[in-house]
Image (cartoon, rainbow, N blue to C red; front, side, top):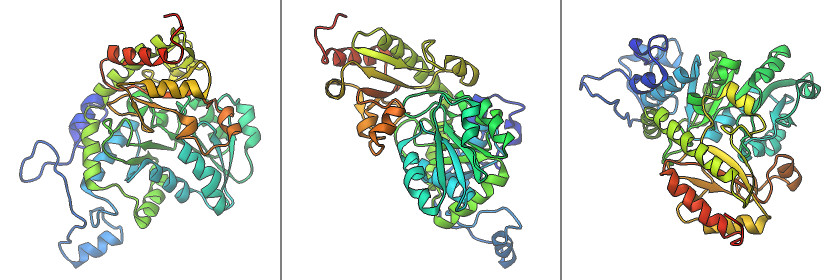
Length: 405
């Protein structure tokens, strides 16, 4: 580990660790960790090369396996999440795929919340059944008894995202961990929407935590990346699988993401502040059916938000009155806010999940998870909140100019 001893969690708080945890200084005495753009590393002698490849000593050999910049990024996330070990990937989906492919075997069975990212659903619906790895899905409102009824003799894990994508519903991590531990199952949590600044699933029993670093961890829509952290006994096989198939993150992207973590707490605070004010505005707007934001007392799982989340996050979901035509008219009317499929950017983004991120789900599956034609996902950025509200207001007026303001 490259974490300086004086930056241990016992001594400094989250913000200080995020900024001060970096690679040891080289002979050039740089203040900021350098970028190691190298595909390979030399050995001092033949014996060292043998020992490294025999995994008798820990040292860098090849950037497909590991790299100092990747390690710095992983060390920071491990500190933030309270994890023993981790590995960084080229994308968030590479992290999800390698985690499942490394930890589960043919004939295994998984339990997953149905409210998860569309590409992850595609893996569980289409890719892993080809390897005879089956998944049963439970609704975010499922009780402990409901979930236990789905457990089979070959069930190996419970997987979830909380808040869910795209409807920002919340799940009870303590309850799900209790079920997992009672039945000897792995407990895996995708923590992308919250980041370790707002929520630490490991403190609630998670064995492995996943992140799409492309989102808030980067925070500026620049690079792709993914991270898996957790207990070393689970990360080790994930690492061995990933390095074989070549899904490791590039040194450059790892370097960028590590720098981004230094401002994570500042950015998230402003994201949450903006999102809360916008959620309040939308909740009162006559063109809106409903708003779901974990920071609002009106959120159906508000007590869970208070229990698990430091703040409400930057993503909210809302439904415009009418149907698909009204939703499209609204989206086409925005002037400042972007339309994209990403979240966690410094620029605010509106997404229509039914026709983009979750378009491959059947209509039944979409509706079961609350993804209607009029549902909008809003990733609130760092612009001035008054400008964002003004843009939303003028666009919502396009739906029905006669609506009272």
